[in-house]
Length: 171
Image 1 (tube, helix red, strand yellow):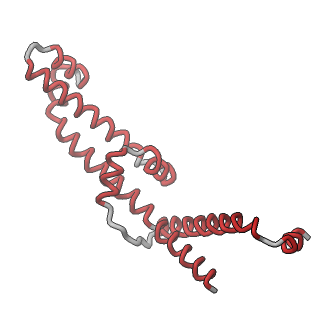
Image 2 (cartoon, helix red, strand yellow; image 1 turned 180 degrees about the horizontal axis):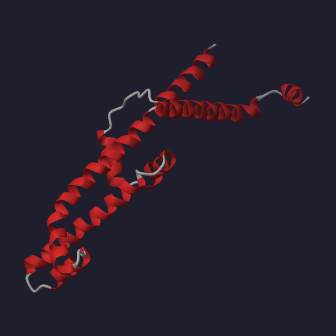
Image 3 (cartoon, helix red, strand yellow; image 1 turned 60 degrees about the vertical axis):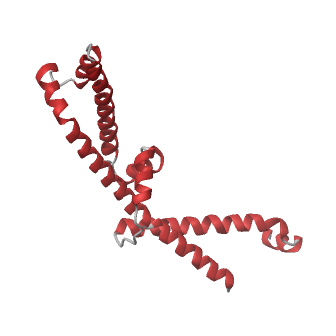
């Protein structure tokens, strides 16, 4: 009887963990979008300058700033280059989050920007979504966790079974 309750508790734990996955992926996508919009807003003035003088090429604007004799302008070149790199990173992250659910899931798990993922973890509020995708994730994780633990326990207990019982199993 205790074993049955432990199985149920394990299943429930897997279910609760699994229903968090779609919410976390959505939270990561919202964080990427917010940072992306903010970075693009901060770059807009430089884009206008690049459009006017360098046919929209931000890299040419950075190179022009670097070539300047003015130390202030050279310092701004480093800041501008960092901002341009940040916008490119956020654009790649945003593009990844526009893919199908399985690509987004894989990306958030293995390919996401570590800083953004950590921000999302820090700000994530656990929730139980009753959306179909959350239910599917929850059931999948619950069944997988229950199967893995049950298999592991059976494998660990195998050497301790009596010889007679093993021979009965093979017949």
